[in-house]
Structures are given as C-alpha cells and as structure tokens.
Image 1 (spheres, one colour):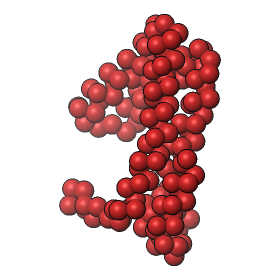
Image 2 (cartoon, helix red, strand yellow):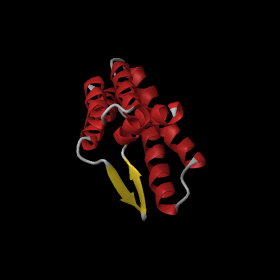
Image 3 (cartoon, one colour):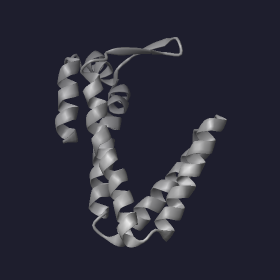
Image 4 (tube, one colour):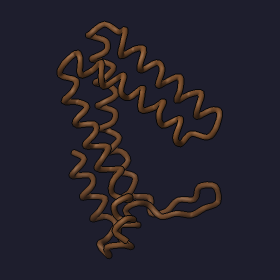
Length: 141
C-alpha cells in the first residue's frame, strides 16, 4: 500500500521540486548551460531505457540532441532564456497536472480503466481525493 501511495504522490511533488531547483540554477550562465545539456542527456538516456516506438525515439532523440547543442553553443542571454522557459514550464506543469485531479477520477486508455492518482491515494489512505488534490496544489505553489 505504501508503494502505491509513494508512486501516486511522487510525480506531482517531484515536478514542483525539480522545476524550483532548475529556476535556482538559472541564476548563473554556467548553471543554465549545464542544466540544458543535462536535460538533453537525460532525454537521450530515457530513450535507451523506456522508449519503444519510432516516433518517440525520433522526437526525443532530436530534442535531446538539440538541447545539448543549444546548451553548448547558444549565447549567454539565449541559453538563459531557453533554460528559464524549460524550468518555468516544469513548475507550471505541477499546477496544471494537479488541477485535472479535481475533475477526473478515472480514465480509459487503450481499453484499460484506471483511477487517478488522487483516487489511488483515497483508496490507500481513506482520505478523500479532493484533499490530496488540494494538498498537491498547495505544495506545487
């Protein structure tokens, strides 16, 4: 039960934390360069481990390589702006993803019905899903 709760909650909090840390690294030119290249390298690594279709491989490899090249060769102003965009988008994703949990309790993907993460937390802890959604929203801010 603990493992299900950990996984259900981790994505929302991790997105907010990674976005916040990324915004802190933006303060220096080297931080933005390392961060942008690091994201590109992580995208390539993800392709090796998880992506199993041609479209996903093509898009993610192209994006990963583009971020590595951008991190290396863009002028300081532009790399800072690009990295700030990525970091801010990551932070905002934590909020918009949680917002969906207030309105969607289950979904059907490929014929398989599954509950939302907030409903999973409700099933594990018996605390209502809207409490979990609200908590994640507040922590994401």
